[in-house]
Length: 233
Image 1 (spheres, rainbow, N blue to C red):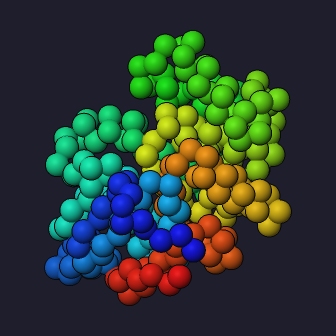
Image 2: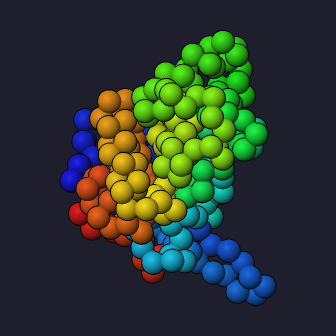
């Protein structure tokens, strides 16, 4: 288990966050007064039953949704004080996202998919290509640069998605069921990759997963249940 070091800068500082939704006259509370701190180079796995609000929490941490109350700072920036355009620019520089389904663009090669965040971030095409090639090499796909998603295995597609999330060297990568669509052996390969990249690059990972064994092997485990977030191990 890796605990948050007190002397290490916080990549995520989430304080007393509440998220409610209104359904007609009813107000539905997804979770209440949640706090979470994540340091650079730390992995935190969030587990819990379906419908507990795990994906909602990830969306809040990524600036894709706003809390009803509370504060969320990413890399020292209170992201919900930014404009929508400001949050989008902040996300492109400081956050990476990986989902259960890879969301790669099918008409583009692995290299072109990984280049995309760099080009959108105003890197030159040459610099974007250099960065994308280096990141694909780091995830073991240097021989698959020109292959399109349909020509790759499930595990390879997820590695491309991870490379795309990491190519701009964000402070934190948010992952929603990154192995949920993979067989056990391929999922274990992705787990080892996350661990290696975390240790080598010092990037923090926050992942939602139903795979308890994976969660426990990677780092700190938090359970979101009945609107509360508590440390399990």
